[in-house]
Length: 268
Image 1 (cartoon, rainbow, N blue to C red):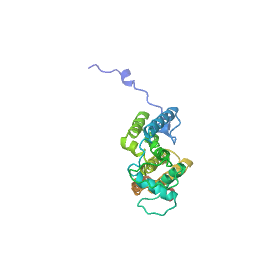
Image 2: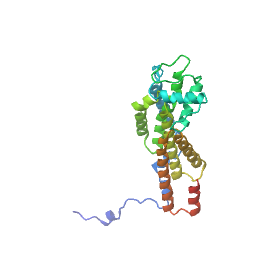
Image 3: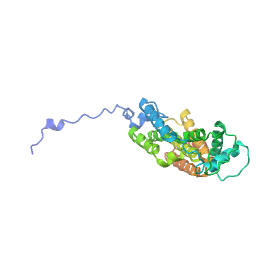
Image 4: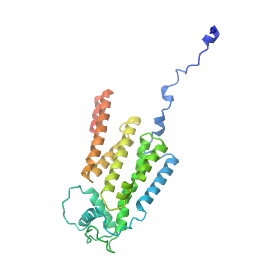
């Protein structure tokens, strides 16, 4: 091998200037430092397209079944009892059933139909409008899936793919087409996950105790209250957010955050 000359040895690649701040090198995470992440027109178009497709899959011929189907006999009856102001006892919390009662009031139901299983709907019961109102909670699951995946730093293509999984899931489509409690339950669960992810993002990359920080914290609490008030199974959403909160506070403690700031986080 030929020996390198002194001139060749002296040649080196130019080092980056030490005067340039590390903050000048932008992190890819900083490009999505806005919550909610809908500033780009492409995101708006994708959300719009997903919402329209979700409306089609959930509402197409929704009034075809003219009889009381499956658990409509239970939850439709519970809504009618609320309309009649009749006391009854049920194992589930009342929020989702109150939404069923609201759908019946909007549809003009007077509470006289008892929703007997397999019985045909009479002409004075606008069951199609009731189903449409309840299906809207299922429709919202698809755009919420896309928005949540964006906040998890997924690419647009992967977030759209995840939303398509929700869009074409047969079980979700079927449940969204009848008068059930599952649509509000799943909607509030999705809202809880989205709000919690947005809060974690603002807490990590934004200012603590800012307007957005408080907004997403309150949204998370409100969504948790709604999901717990729909069905007791919503307790698992509380556990999920609770574990994430404990992990976040423990990390702040390990980062030697001041006791005053740590106390403020605990109070919040």
